[in-house]
Image (cartoon, rainbow, N blue to C red; front, top):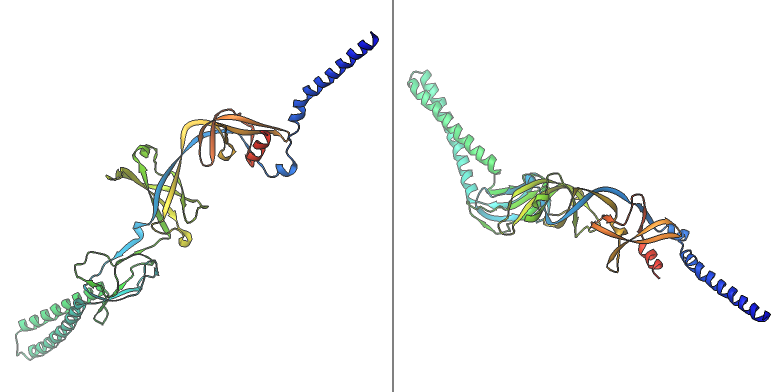
Length: 362
C-alpha cells in the first residue's frame, strides 16, 4: 500500500508539472517575439491623432504655355519664303530673324518710297522758285500758297510710306524679314523654305511663347464640379518626372462645359524653373480639399490589407506589438482615416511593418 501511495503521488506531481508548463507556454510564446535594436532603427512610429478629414480628386490634364505670354506671328505681306532661320523648340530673342520673304508688295512699297521722296524734292524746288518769282512780283501770292500745299502733301505721303516701312520692318532690300516680337521659344511653326504665301494668309507662321511660367489645363467631370474652388492646392505629376511633385493652385475655373466631353476645364499656374515642363506634356492633377468631419488619422502606408481586413500594428514596447483590425473610412495617397479600432495617442508602425506582421502571424 505504501508503494501504491508513492506511485500515485509521483503521478500527481508529474501531471502538475505538465500543467504548469502548459500554463506558462502562452506567456513564454508571447515573450518569444521581441524587436532587436537594429530592427528598431529600421521602423518608423507614428502617433494616432484626430484631424479634419481630407479628400482627393485626381484629374487628367496637360501642360500648355501661358496664353498671356504667347504671340502668334503672321506675315504682313505675301510672297515666296526664301529662308527659315529657326526650328520648333528653338529659343529666340526679341528682334531675332525668323524667316525671309521675297515679296512683290515690298518692291511696290520701295517704289512708293522713291516716288514720295522724288515728289517732295520737286515740290520743295517748285516752292523755292515760286517764292523767288513772288518776291520779284512776277507771280501772285496764291501760287506760293499752292506750292506750299504741294510740299505739305508730298511730305505727308512720304511720312505715310515711312510709317508703313516701320510697321512692316522693311529694310532697303526687296525682302521682308519676319522677326520675333518677344524673347521665348518657338512653340509652333507652320512655314518652310519655298512656301508661297498669299497676302491674305490667315495662318500664323510662328508662335513664340515664354514658358518660364506654364499652365496646366485639367478636365473636371460634371459630377465633381461642386468640389472645385478657386485657390485649391494642386499637386502636379508628369511621366517625365515621376518622383517629383509640382505645387500649384487652381487660379481659374472655366464655367462652361465642353459639349463633347461634358467636362469643365480648370487652370493651374506653375513656375517652370529650368523649363522642365514642356508644352503638351500629359499631367496628373491631384486636388486636396477638407470636409466637415474629424476622424482619427494615420499614414496610409501603415495600413495592411490581409484576409479581407485592414490591420494596423500598434506598438507599445519592443516585446508588445499588436496586429489590430481597423475600419478604414478613407485611404488617400498619404493619409488614412480610421473610423474604429484605434485611440488617440497610440503609436503605429508605418515602415517595414509587413516584416513584423508576418513574424507575428507565423
